[in-house]
Image 1 (cartoon, rainbow, N blue to C red):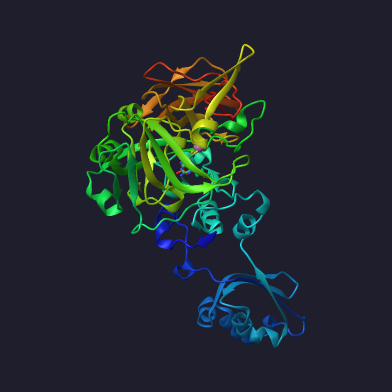
Image 2 (tube, protein in one colour):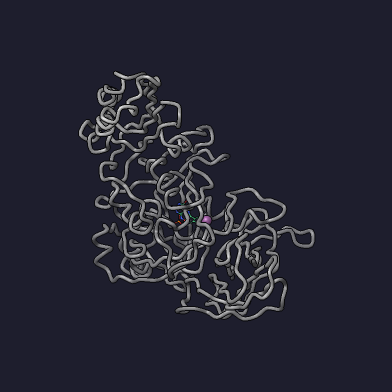
Length: 493
Ligand SMILES: Nc1nc2c(c(=O)[nH]1)N[C@H]1C(S)=C(S)[C@@H](COP(=O)(O)O)O[C@H]1N2
Ligand SMILES: [Mo]
């Protein structure tokens, strides 16, 4: 595997959305060191204000930078005459040269170091899927950005992280940096200029489209909610294997791109063309499979016609970040997000249903009903409401309070959300903002809290087709589609 640094201006969204500050000089991070300096009580420069000032000037960040040293933090352990500095420098010699004034008054120890993200992401090699894709994003960088954006990480290799449910509150869409991440393999780095989307198989005119050509086609923008089929998996009882998602593996963005049908029509479907396979650039080794497995999914031509599938290149007005599928991904509105293939490189039109690993072996419900095994493919998102405010364990003041959240469904727009407080009868919440076919709906319930004490808030969504949420979603072996009614335990003070 070749590990790549992604130019940091591609992370603009993380910075503007979340005011994560990065120095431009960090585009190529330098080696990191921890310095420990120790001097005696007698030689302590702080005892002499003039000497102290000279040393402070020397250790100032601008002066350090002039010496090729980037100081990231420094502190003196109280009463110990012991100074610690965390700094970056091209090599240890440069750092030691800069630290010469400290050597005159005491000892200097320089320890090579790494960030926590780099440490964690380089560990666990035995579990690490052997890479077969050419180039991958540096997992430490990707992980660092996700942590700084406030995602709760579930795994580093591959990188998986969810949004905290209170963080779902805010605008109609999520800031890109806070959008949950679900990856099965290393994150491939594709070059925007050399990238081509190939469309082949049962078509009249096989195509290879550059990003420029795709941008020249009619652009369409849709606000679409993506939810991982495993969202809420950790709440199934008994526990099921797989990524232990809480409730934050869901987000909404405004996606811009080209309608898939338009591209398929340009290629021209040949007689018998009924199925389409979508191939991502990522792959890895799966236990029990000899050859590396590619991330591939399929849809039938009928499903594509019904669904207004998008080939998206922009997310909230910015080019997709490498984490979310740069330069092109599929967006399949209404479906659990596994259908929305990232880093899409090939579209293959066939007359056979896709039998890829993530189509045929994973993403199936396996239920046990009346002692019989039953199964069905995971497709449209189940109807569901989440309470974003109050958060779990939050204290609310007595008096007027707004309870808020989001609700969505893959089978139709949300028609109502009901709220119950401490087991009271369901009362209808107000739906806020525009109603969209494939994006979550904000809702709000204003109430007056009269009594202090524990407060259990529950919210239940219903969609236009009349589907609503069960008290407890039906358990299934791989833990998909958990849309049990969300309950939050808060307190009135
Ligand atoms: N190529 C590729 N596409 C993929 C995946 C993947 O691992 N590889 N994961 C899928 C799953 S299971 C989900 S939930 C969504 C997550 O999209 P996000 O990381 O942009 O939130 O991408 C889907 N598309
Ligand atoms: Mo997923």
